[in-house]
Image (cartoon, rainbow, N blue to C red):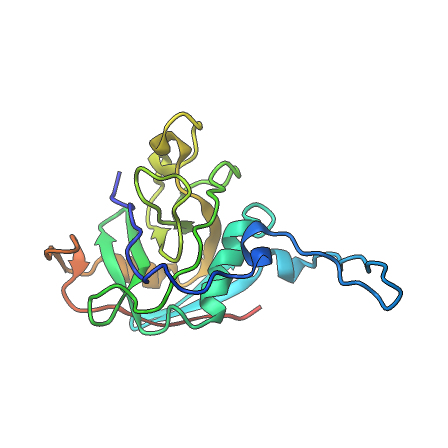
Length: 217
């Protein structure tokens, strides 16, 4: 299993996000007479939003699965919409396993922006860590510790899937979408030469920059 334990990146002491963005609930708006108007029904686009990860190696298009991972998708979009990921890097590359991002800036230091409250782990959603799947990074010993960091699987990594609730390892890592275009870019990144530093192992020799992550649908 490659090391997806994270938790660095961002101070973690900034403003907390709106509750609706994390717990997935949103009260219906009251009408003029005090009654509540039913919330609109979800559309296909709202349940499967698409984001484009623009990197210095090319673009990666990812379809998110809000039907299976509502809290995680809302959390990810919270960061993307706030430009949190702009000018960050792919900070680790595990050859033939996966690439990790969302925690470090181009200066090789944790992203100097506050992270929000950790999102509840939805790894039991039946989505698997297969090639092309995007999933959240968390602390190895803390099931519900994911904030901004994520990884893209380059191979089938079923040892990262949910198995049971008995141990953090058994709980797994939450998949919340899949690459639909640009897997060749992911593979190109996965071929990067890497080195170990005092703070990071297997970090690319030459920085691979995430210019932006933006919702396209």
